Amino acid sequence: MTDTLGDFTADLARWQAQVGERSDLLVQGFSQTLANEAISGGKFSPGTPIDTGFARANWDGGIGAIPANPPAGSPGAAVARVDEAVLRAQAGDLVYLSNTAPYIRRLEYGWSKQAPAGFIRLALAAGQQIADEVGAHIAGASGGPAG
Image (cartoon, rainbow, N blue to C red; front, side, top):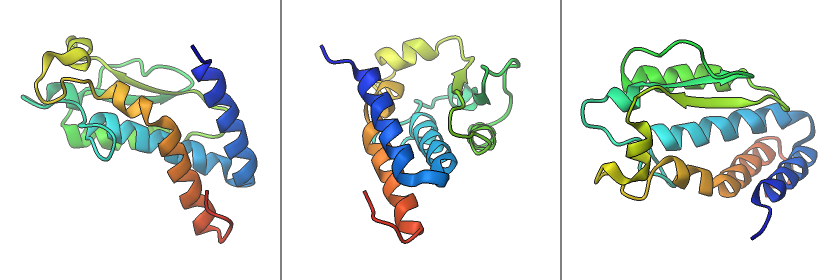
């Protein structure tokens, strides 16, 4: 079994060296994309299954600590809350994505036919692809080499 976390940490260090002073943008872009994949779905994940909207509306983001108060509002408000949090992140920060829905674990492990293979694990499994795409976008936006 490989040291996935160690490999991922080494990759992050390599990407940080490649983007230099834009490392905050890398952390923000990666965190925002990963969160949006887990919440709303996209290229790598179907997103949080939605029936009443409660589970999808209960996502929140934090920097340095798990958010203390249960969120309120709609699924769209959840995305806005998470975006607001992660867009304050800087290189080296711990970025948290949390959900207070009491059945979120069951949803992740196949309780919903909308995401029988999960949604958080799928987004996390695409972490390297997401980081590569964000890094290429940042490098391309600055006129530097992409990838």
